[in-house]
Length: 405
Image (cartoon, rainbow, N blue to C red; front, top):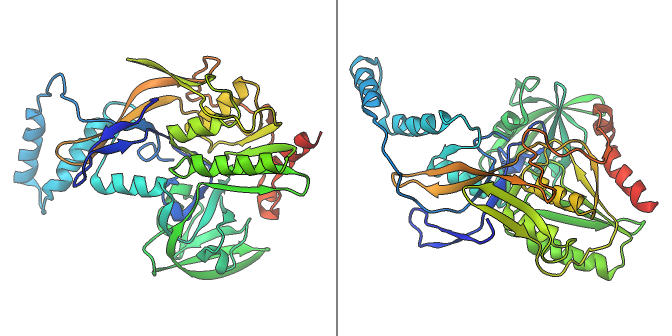
């Protein structure tokens, strides 16, 4: 997990690939332009923590004659046309599903490409972050210069229908899949805004969403918002840290809410902004035991810091939150994190597609595995539907209050 692996993809030469730490998103916000992230990354088949890998010779072969028996009977008896490619892909997915681990999955080539595009923040959609509270689907935020922003969508709007389909029973993933689409196509939303029902038609566009956004408040608090751990995260975060340092911020808010993970190297680099070189960030325990250590110059070391977390903070986000908390570098505010403490590796499959398979568990510096349990905040602050509708970020307000003391 500490060094890049080499992975070959179809039609490409071998090149270094960074390891990735992704997770499911359960009830957290997603960027619509980022697809089922979002990718968002939350279906176990889309988000998990994994790294680069190579094809390996299997120690044995399964007797698949019974599968051929089923196919033979299906072919001779089925009243319809069979797509053999879909049958093969379905068999691969069924094989991995039968392992009984929600994070061990088979990706088709198309799914693998979609996963990578989602992670890099390059998508086609409307550019809005969604959140589910109870039966209501809310817009939590719109991206700058996005179709959603230009169409007048606002934080706290309730999405009642998408293309005349009611959203009451939809998950965030379902909403994302229905709202996103090809550039130039249109999606119709029925929303409740300021207690008024409105219908808005929005033309989708390509969205490029940087993984890090920053600001410095009027009170001299630096805010570092990380939406995912992508290729640009390390450089953007270090640039922000240098700017915070140069301008003498009194404290820092690291906002990891709704961040389902990404490249593990980015999590390492982000944690290293607060931790001295050599400090343990995370430990992997499996067939091999490995420790990931802080490196580089800790520009934000000693600056009072609050990390904002919620149920959508997962995997790489939990690694960062756990490391900063265990080393006393930050307080945690918000809600309990998702709880994704296993490690996967991704490998090319010779016959096509990719396999993401669980190989180990990871532990915080204090030796805690957070699987299913998550990380509890030092100060628990829940967000109500009224808060969202009113645009009141009570978690951020609490963080600012703590840093002003």
